[in-house]
Image (cartoon, rainbow, N blue to C red; front, side, top):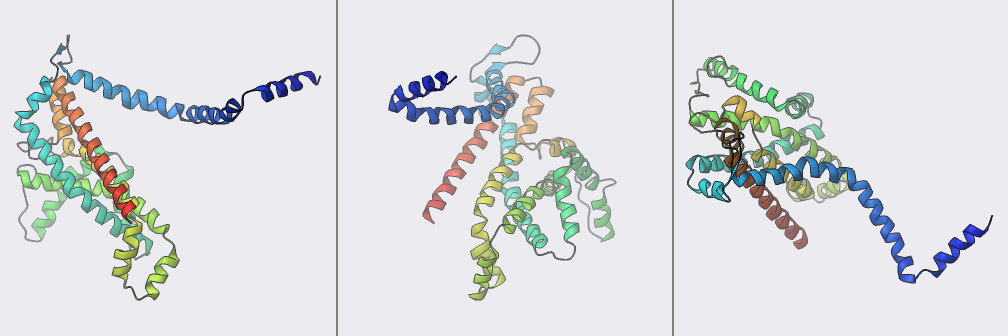
Length: 312
């Protein structure tokens, strides 16, 4: 009965020292990849495979019906002379440049109010967190109802105050403002949640020490709280930029990119080209460009963040 263990022990003892040292590392490697396998499978099926498919379609002249004709980089070359594409790109960049910092400031402000338990905190929580947990289409429909130029609540309130009511669906600037307001309402909830969690994680002794040193509330916020929130701010910036470049439901429900392309974004333009105009190759090429731009911006921002952390 004792022979098998003796044989096993003898075999292990006779193994080369390098192999015996390598065995635990191999087991850890195998265990790690076994635990990662479900996530890698989902990533491959729902991210990598569609991305490769989009790149393949972007190299063809395809209408979705019949055989696709290979055109190489013809769709990408066509973007250079497409004024609607450049207008959509400018609209998307402007929307990101305005909405991201404003969402960060609003999120931090509401998080500070909720942390300090000011009166009406429950109202702030409901107003800013509700859009983040409900469907984006519902949020967009609410925005369309609020900013309707015929029966909208905003126009009625402005009229009651004796102020002129903008033509939200007919004027390009007014339509852009309405989309921006609804987008801020929908996106600020994420900033509130993450900033509130980060604020609650700050050691109270640090703030108390700053107060004892004579720092005012504004100085504590600027020189103590804000630097400690930099990792959260970095993560939020990346996430909000990515979400802004992916905005579709709010624009599509509220304005469909109009009037006259004033609110057309890259994602809505890609959808219009791929499904309405039956230019799936061109629409896929726009989608690939959006992916590359977001990826490049994320990498550059990440490197800048790493350099700033190393300088501290």
